[in-house]
Length: 471
Image 1 (cartoon, rainbow, N blue to C red):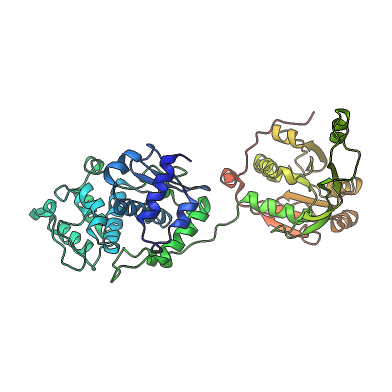
Image 2 (image 1 turned 180 degrees about the horizontal axis):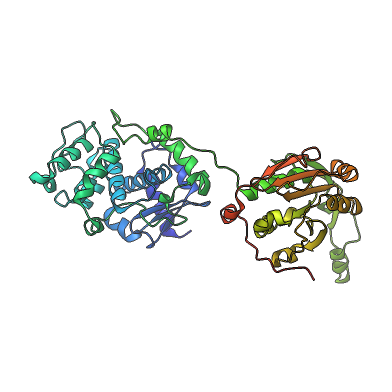
């Protein structure tokens, strides 16, 4: 880490009142970097988050500890607003409205003139619409808000009312402010306003891209804990209380992807529980240094050079617990009833390659064995029919004890010998969308149901182009 980065970290830690905002934990979680890649500041929301600061902008506009603190708090608000997005697609007008509400909230939270100077010195009260991004000259907490010079004209009467509400306990909601500004601004007008924080396009790292619970769960969790401990302004106002936004927000559980469903099924069939709790003892020798002479290559070389070693490399037997489990034989349905899904099914198996037996068994009315490499190349052999008997015979002949069958389930009822073979083995069945359980219900130990494979690219499945019959 460079010296400038360390000094900037120290500046941030010194800027925040001790114990007031609980930010040291966040600053330990997110590395701090100076970069020209962002206009002002940004929190990069990914597995290893970074707090990015533009050194030129910071030196010019956030030269005091109070301004640097307000800039950091502003950007943390953007992280949470990115998670609780109000609109399907963020526009420049939305960004202006978000910044206006964020700046108003921070002014009520930290009303000292040294803190609000970040807004009052960076934005002009005589320019429209940037006047919404700062309090009017002479603003004081608890006092009636003045109308900025940019809104004194009669045609701005309604906007002037909303502005005064924005900087008083009455507050203004996002939607009301957005709809009032919409007919008064255009792209050219909005383009002239320089906003604080992260307003990049919705790339993987942008805090406005949403889904932070997936992209950066540790960062989101830490921000939640920080927000819960922030001192609340007196009389929290509409659209201002971030803690209220977090409490009121509903978070939907993320449905496991097809790849996760299939991997879970293979862990169950292979002898490993869903959370990896099934563990077994394994012999594991431990390397030690011993004064007792042993047959050791290093010691022999030293003796040949005339050196009498005092310690010798040796090993002592030991045992340790470790996750255990077998690779699973996969029987992949390539019959006519799943013809349109076969490329996606190939990708499904390849996505779980480390859990799959090196030979995959394609079945229709016969079983054709292919390697994972051949599967990746798209080789296929099918008669277009379906018969579960060929699977039972193959399992008996090759003594298969753990198997996963990927199919639509329309394979026919197994006969007596096939029923016995399937029942004796640990069998998991992954059904394609719309599949049926009745044919295999009596012999299946574990089930998984896959979503629409036609959109498998969103489920981490590679698409495979079939190359025709095996040679």
